[in-house]
Length: 92
View 1 (cartoon, rainbow, N blue to C red):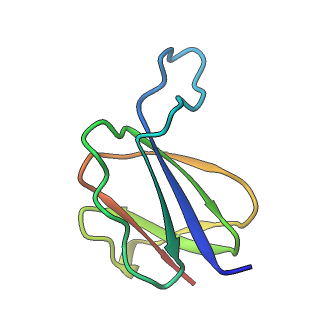
View 2 (cartoon, helix red, strand yellow):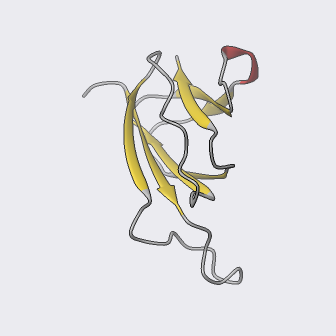
View 3 (spheres, helix red, strand yellow):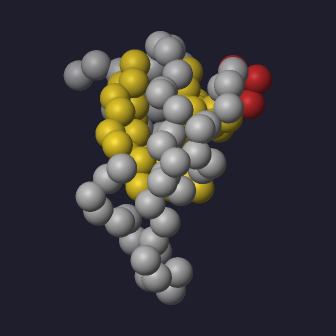
């Protein structure tokens, strides 16, 4: 299996008392670890849900760089509150 990061762009939960993923997604992106950053998040995107096939680090910012990396273990979904226009990038 390739080392990749799947990114689902989601709108905010409909009910703050039940923070579940809202479907359908705004967008879906699949990134290579150590590859280019994602496309900028859409204007409706409030949350991203990410899954990685290999443990890696990610950075979420307007211009992601390796200077602000967050560790991400493989094999489970992780949700992050984000700003429209920002991007995510994965590093080994």
